[in-house]
Image (cartoon, rainbow, N blue to C red):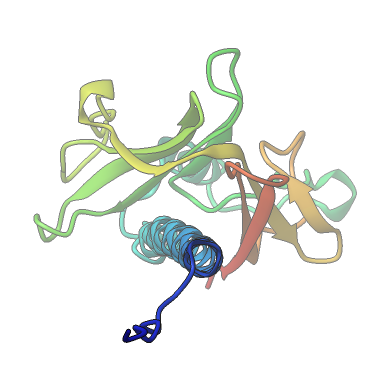
Length: 227
């Protein structure tokens, strides 16, 4: 009588333990990959937000760098000049010399607040596609979006106002948009400024508050000198 030798192998319990270990390792690996994928997605979103923010701030700075100075005086400046000419160029006595009001913002720039738009700034800048002509440019926030609109170029006043249909969404998720002007000897003044200034502004501070899907509103600030 011959006895058969038992063939080597795994028992059912050993196979189940191996399967459980493999499943646990797969779960750990999947959670690690999912965490890395989520982090990469958030990083891409932050990068895209930063790129859009930088583009909007660069466009604002470009508009300000191309703004009108003395090439196209505003109607208010022309009226003041004509009033001085009407005095015959004579200097008033010191005791009766009237103080000349100074506008805080330079010529061709204005800021306002309305019920529909919390804050808007408008400026006159050179038209890039029409040399020798100028256009009105407006920036404002409405419905959480920062918009920019440019009017048709013209060579003299009155310049056409920008149309709402021509507006371009420059930045989404905007919670706040504020601009302050630096008055020499007085410091930063919120726009639109109440009353006249002692000296014209030497710089502007643009502040944008961005609302993210997670966390508080982030404030971004850029100071633009006015030469």
